[in-house]
Image (tube, rainbow, N blue to C red):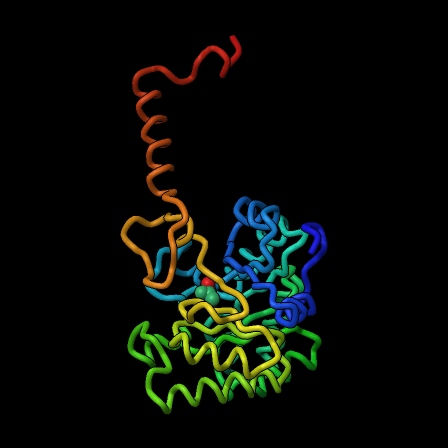
Amino acid sequence: MSKNKKVTTRTFKRFKKSGKKITMLTAYDYPTALILDNSGIDGILVGDSAGMVIMGKDTTLEITLENMIYHTKCVHNAVKRSLLIADMPFLTYKINKNEAVKNAGRLIQEGGAAAVKLEGGEEVVPIIEAMLFADIPVMGHIGLTPQSVNKIGGYFIRGKKKSTASYIKRSAKALEAAGVFAIVLENIPAGLASEITSEIKIPTIGIGAGPDCDGQILVLHDVLGFYSDFAPRFSKKYTDLNKIISKAINSYISEVEKGKFPQKKHFIK
Ligand code: KIV
């Protein structure tokens, strides 16, 4: 596919049919979204992981709808080609359907997202249907759902037990029947992800779900090595920005302190 052709929810479905692996990363601001979009990434998720990697919290629970709209706007300003998806934050879609549709609509109308993502299995089908009735495309998210961290009691692999595995599989099929255009499978056994991927017609996007998903997504700050003290097992650090940025900042501090910066070319008399 041309690097300039706009990626849509239909493109995602076409990629699954053709066997082209779907590439996704998260982004939360203009400069990184610009790089991602220019690199030809298929999808950009403004994840509620912003609550952790941008706000510095231990969970995704504190990020608000207003915060998410702001980050989505910043990313939208940069994105020309990739499919832009925004996360519905905690408690913005499970209270009632009307509120859920209104909140999702704000991410589309004010934030500029092309679709929203929400966490949950078969129990969220009525919410998804209400959003689709309002013409809002929805991406599902099952397996480890970080917004349920306090209910589950931690960030564990989900689906090792037979009963949880069958709930996850049932949920994938229920979400497909409800009309989601793709499903994120987070932190589930690779075998289960593989079975789900072959049993549904819409694409699965894996994170910690093995190689057989139709695509992969990672959190940008993990990929870039922003944090030296945190590396999820399923992620891969493609560079060490923490080291690179620290080196640059230390050079700046040292040059200012030694009077080496600014030089003549940096100012006028
Ligand atoms: O919030 C997020 O970044 C996500 C991805 C990890 C899938 O939901």
